[in-house]
Every structure is written in C-alpha cells, then in structure tokens.
Image 1: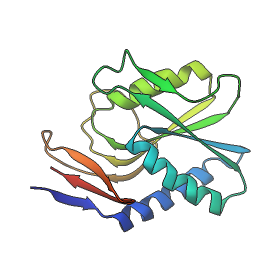
Image 2 (image 1 turned 45 degrees about the vertical axis):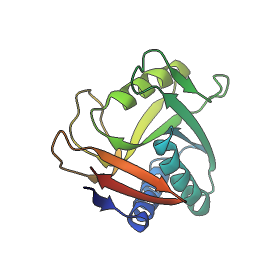
Image 3 (image 1 turned 90 degrees about the horizontal axis):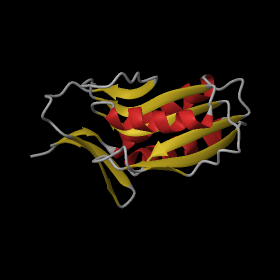
Length: 163
C-alpha cells in the first residue's frame, strides 16, 4: 500500500519556494551553484534551477554528485571542476532520512574549499543519525522509522509516497 505525500503540483510549488529562498540567500553572489545528488536530488535540482533562471539575474550553474548509497566510502563522483572557484554551493537531495548521503556529499565538497555550503531537501523525515543540518526544506514529515519515503518519477511526473 502506498500513501501519496506530495503530488507533482505540490512538488513544483515547493521547488519554486526553495528557489526564492536560494535567491534571497545569494544576494551577494554573482553565480548560484546548485549540486544535485543523483538521481532524484538532481531531478529536484533541475526544477529549482528552471525557476532560478526565471526569477534572478545571477548566473545559475547545475552540477551533480553521485554517491553509492550502499557503500559511500568507495564511490563518490562529482562533475565539478576543482579549478573553478565558487563562493557558495547549495547541495540538493530529495529525501533526508538519516543524513548519511548528505554527510558524504558534504565531505566530498569540502575538497573544493567553498566558503559556504547550504543543504536543500524536498522532504526532511527527522530521523537523523548524522549531524546534518537542513538549511532549506520543502516539508518536514513525521513518519514511523521503518516507513520508506520515495520520490517517484514517471513520464516527467513526480510524486512523493510512503510505502
């Protein structure tokens, strides 16, 4: 049995709101760097970037980071050039469960010497095992620990469900 938490229209509205929050937090930056955690965090990032390009004059750059969620120590790839200097980065993921994925992503991003790293998530489940603070979140969702929250992508339609 699945329970829908967010439909496509609500996800779009949340991503639009997150984009405005990012703009407000980037007033002094010429470039807004968004890094999406593949796969589903990257999909959320694309929605945010689309809105950012419509509402601000800053240059918007979208990059990705890929993490093996089963063994994050062995496989983290980022398509960001170490030679390019950015002041601030926004790392985006779909669902924050324990914080493990964001913790490893942030660890990788520390190699790039950013002055500021902000975290953005669509859904924060509040079951953190790792000390990751969410700077911008779409919704907080109280669930049982053994529930699974998933972002489903079908034919350019997104929905968040509990299974």
